[in-house]
Image (cartoon, rainbow, N blue to C red):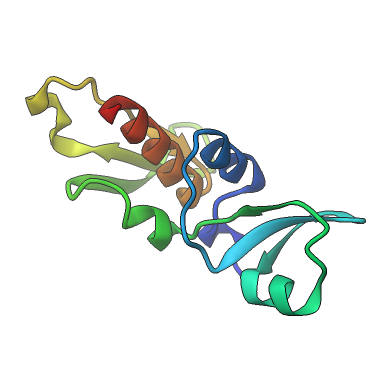
Length: 123
């Protein structure tokens, strides 16, 4: 499984703390050996519900919640070998909003951070 397709534990916690709960296929589950990314069905069918779990949205699950004109681009910062995902809402300048560029080496995290920002701006 490519974990870059899913929000990291830290980004998933920030979504949860912001009150954004998405219907997901995967969860971060706290067990005796720490946090693990597991399918929600496997956790439900195979494990007790005595441990904490946090939804772990995929890129697509977050993408569906963002405005239509959301852009995601892949960039390489000058002088660095790392590739970053940049997520932003393209036309929000026209509506008087300040644009917010979210950047991460994990594209799902960049989208999750943008979703948190979008929801906070709309409130």
